[in-house]
Length: 129
Image (cartoon, rainbow, N blue to C red; front, side):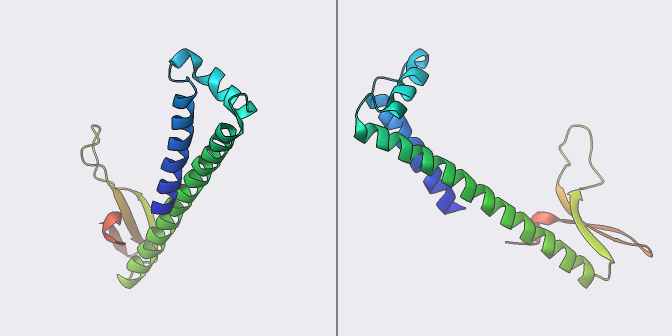
């Protein structure tokens, strides 16, 4: 996930700095200048920087979301394992049941369920570090 963030920031900086160096800092001219940069009207090196920046930006976003997805899958598996260890039939990630309207008591729970036991809720953040 850190690699994804680094790529994302690098891509943003490449596009932003190139846009600033080409006179595109005014809000009303940003898209016009960005289009000109993409078309190569400000020179090949600046066009290459904008294309590379866009690529780094997109690649970084994909890597970050992939890291989040892997982390969520790991947490879900840890929840199922913990519930089975505690003697429950199933485990799932979901909202806690003791929450109120103002969201001050909302947290993500590992919910363990079995027909013959009361439901057990464990803070999901404590399952994987």
